Length: 253
Image (cartoon, rainbow, N blue to C red):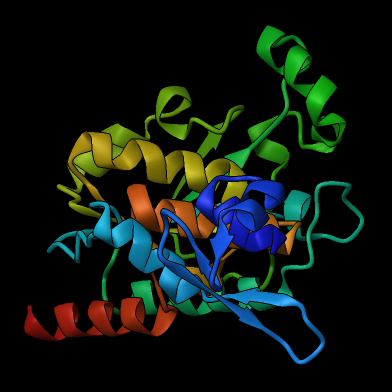
């Protein structure tokens, strides 16, 4: 129930109040009951509600993709860091994406967050996220997760904020590559991934998010953000579709 309420943007109290004859009034979502009397809701029906309201369309792929890997470095993947998450599966999928990008000549960008002590905005931000102080304090001390095999042609950018576009030369790089499709992977779904997905479409570039290659520290937050991104800002899809696209594009060149 909590997840269904969050997806619909209402409280659980309102969700119960709107139920009549096992349907959520105004949303057309069916209420299913378990033998024990617990309510269950279909995420497919909730997605259909948004589609009927003019959300959840599809951008599709363009012709000039770039892969960006967000914060897949030891500050976020090492269990010794306070910023880490349980992301072994996601890192493996990112590794597969990077390898595929290299094989298909798709440019790869690694975006890395760092902490700057004299930054006034970060001094406010750490009141909300104190763990940020554990991030590297200079780009030179940031280390890519060792499971990811980078190439010399890959590009590294560094940012202090979620808004990578405003704090780095990301847009310039994408414009040089004539990018029309940005494949977004990494961490975390509710932070940098969401911010980049939200801003990318403003630059006439399609944001594509391989669902298995992004992660968050909270599974519910992760799923809710993916659902919201897919409704409004980008195409969230299975990673095998992205990998198939890269191979198909490469074969046709």
